[in-house]
Image (cartoon, rainbow, N blue to C red; front, side, top):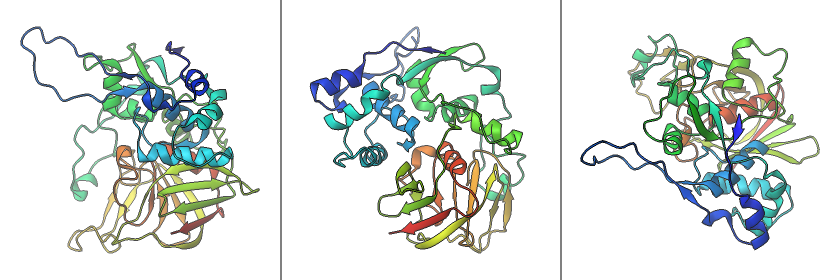
Length: 349
């Protein structure tokens, strides 16, 4: 892998005492149509300065959601968590003091160039995931819809961002070199007792094996975040989450982790899902990153409740859940490495 050249944005901005919110924006050039211009959907503008802050926070365990170079509520959550751990004024902004605290991590560039290898775009794929649960249950796997979606999850982003970074005509095939958000982990030395399939999932999501162990998990309904603390009560990780709904509220109280189930199937039971008609039949939805609980289910002592992944990382913090705590697949997998059976989990307002 080769780092993409970029200005040392954090150094310049911190020295100038200004925010990273006014950085450069880039947008992918579109391939020529060879004739009359055709109307195409606008690709997202990528603010590399903001992306740099997102990438650093993501690598430190303060998940800003999808890495997209945008100032979002999820990025503000991540900044608040980082600021708390550094004893800074908690603003949720990339202010001068925060940029100075991020400065030592500036070597983690916002993007890198990688060569697509065969494994990273290998199927099987399900181009059209059916909406009907009975039809989903007939599938062998709730797989990614395309090689582009699989690559996007690997680099903690969306297909739209990858297209914006590389151009709409870039082939997603082995041997092609593409620019991606820099999510390469420090370590892939995953637990020795992890199954080969789970290790492959962790690696495919660029989950850092060096994630610290949590002695306590706190889920805040009002802040829409999951926080992890060590034995000394220090915040060691924070992840934006989708938490319950009006019809299925988060069950406040003290619970604990029972077990972690990697790559689980999902038991769709209308009797406990208020968003599903009672006329529907219960179904077993097969495993895969695009099933309702994503790549991992962290089962809790409150029956039917857990912490899990999602098929729609771009909607984290913006939609509702069936009462559980929903994270991006990569954040859920990281939290799964941080907890064990018996880890206390506190749901608070």
